[in-house]
Amino acid sequence: MTQKLATLFLALVLCICACLLAGCSSCGGGNEEKDAAAETGSDGDADMDADNDGDTDGDSDTDTDGDSDSDSDSDADADGDAGDWQPLPDADSGTPCGPNCRQVTFTAEVETTYDLGNGHLVYKDYEDNLKVVRLDTMKERKVDVIVTNIYDIGFPSINYPWVYFVRVNYQGANDNLEILYRRNIDTWVMEEISRYNFSEAFSPRSLLARGKYVCMYMSPPLGDNANSYIECINPETKETKKITDSNWMYMPPFHNGELVTYAYQIPDSIPFGSGTHIIVKRISDNSVFESWSYLGDKTPDYMSTIGMVWVDWRNDTLGNKNGNSSRYNSDIYYLDLITLKETPICTHPAIQRYPATDGNLVVWMDKRNCADPNASASQDNETLYLYNLTSKTETNITEGVPGWKDYTRISGKWVTFLMPSNPGINIFAIDLSAMGLYAGVKEGLNTDSKDLKTIPKGRGVQ
Image (cartoon, rainbow, N blue to C red; front, side, top):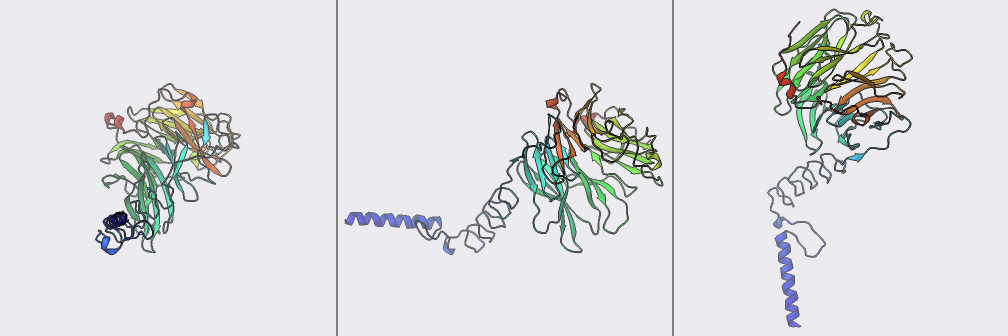
């Protein structure tokens, strides 16, 4: 009996010692809080870190996952879902878009400033949710969620693995901030790139991330009637390059990481579009790579690493040159950035709009099958066409699909566009490889722009 008591006493002593070494005040359950004598941190609270917040991860919040938010998962938001990729709902059977096409957003309405690159689509819906879709798996996750004191999110762009966007943060009457952020959709790290006080200075109104740069259309301060300009920022070094001075109605820029293109109106040209310049510049030194002047609307719409496309009214005979914007004939043209050769892609007498290019493919919206092929208003039976610059073949990729279609994008094997659905307006995606239209195609939009190293200096200002 005495030996049994001695054994139990020894076991109790060992248990107490083990608890003391571990920093607890009881053995076998009950109260698990640490006391002041057992703390090894330097902040004077009852935990073992040094930041005085009551947890043990060393950051400034009250959870234990080390990511500086207030939940217990490993992402940087506060919704507790770890930013998981969620499968998209089944496509809307009431709005078919063809056998190799499917609906990829399911909101009441999608903003038109969405972006496509490297098999990923990033967009914002009108509930201020910023989301990214991985098209190969048809899965989606939130990029950013509206939280306290954040008023708005906009202008999303993707340069994989980074998604770039602007947050508007109203902090007071004299401190109206727009902040440029980026988030890595693989690691979920979020970084602040730059801040803009839009009540006192110019601030972003569009952005596009490609290669080493984010290029932005900068709008004047509130209440200021000055003109806008374009600047590009390197998110790694924070170096900013001002591409234009304040001038005449600059269009939002398109770029490929090394060259940037934009348009501005020739002064005193009324109506707008009756006199337009297109300029292509090198971002690195702001030198002019190529320039056009044309008495007719000619605005850049898209640029890849090897070419750019635009809507052109040089063949219009219906009134746009005279200021009639309700009926006109617009065409699609392409410039090869290697050879500087200009190619008409489509000069059909109907309206062609929303061109985009990647590699040797060009896609656009066409009204040739509509009831009124020259009416600018959206119509039923608008069609998307694809042109292969190598084979010189044109293909209708939405044949028999009803409804209007606009804001086309292309990257790799994916073509995306906006179309009415149930409910509202949503984004649809076409897989060109499933249609047999992608074999042998050279990708260009989001590559590292190696092709540009062989580009000639350009003809300069004409």
